[in-house]
Image (cartoon, rainbow over all chains, first blue to last red; front, side, top):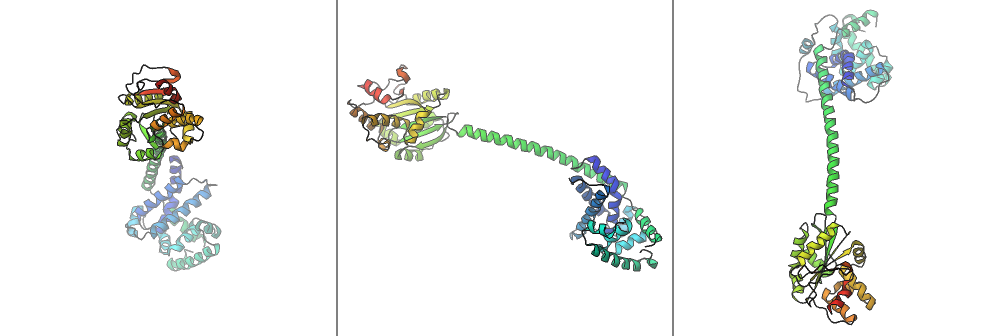
Length: 160
Length: 269
């Protein structure tokens, strides 16, 4: 079990990453709070050592994606709210660049992580495969399909 | 993806930051959980230590309570033995012969003070029947020779007081163990040793089924002495080990150690 100082350091270092993944998957601020608590509590309770910061970050990403999936899978989730409500809470003003985020959010869930990890976190297909526990070819396939969908969605296909 | 596209992605997601309130809430939550966990860890360690101590106390207490430290063998014809713990309470009742087993099964003296238990046993119909005639009851206290031995022997003597045909003796644990090997009470074992010297055909089983009066008569007959009857003037006499007398202060009860069968026979006649 990690100390409170280690927990605070991890929150400061990875809060934005967790927040972005939540943004990709969730439309509810309360759920985001739940994910934050789940992910960082798992981090605190995780007894294994990380080889380096990259390894630690990949672990956080993996745990966050899983936590989001688990939450969305929960059929009995009582809290629901609109995207607008979420954006209001997040204090995000709708500007040009939010179009990209919305485009990712509009993708079927299985494509969102691949797109986010590839385009924003700039992992290559092999690294994405390791993080998501998917075959590299599957990652390529998902990326190719996601690109097509994003091209249609984003004006002029600039998103690709 | 061209550079413009890349920048668009970068800038779009770079604008997303975790709110300070969200970070603070998360930190508070983690701090709470860590404190609770530390507290529950301390409590768990305390509870585990307390449980261990309790087990030790319970185990040790049970051992102290349920382990007999002194035995009182009761012989009329029913032959049984009471195990007495260090708190002077009866913790076991065992019959040596058939009558003794029947009597032991009908008794409810476990966890009673040994004096109360003895009084209840003496008051049993089957015992009273023997005592009302010319029967003879012997109470033999065995133990490791500690202070409790003497105290219990004194207690047993006070129970025997008022009964002219009850005799009290004491013996060692070693003697008791030897007697147990033959399935006899210590008193019967001593009689067996004497009888087998005079009549090698005698068996422990035979001795086990005879009444104390019959055994005494047989010893007397084999040694060429007359029948020994309680109350022939010697019953109140108390025989201490090595022939020491204690002044017969125990009323009808007699007391002695060692092979009093032969010794007493001589005195009585």
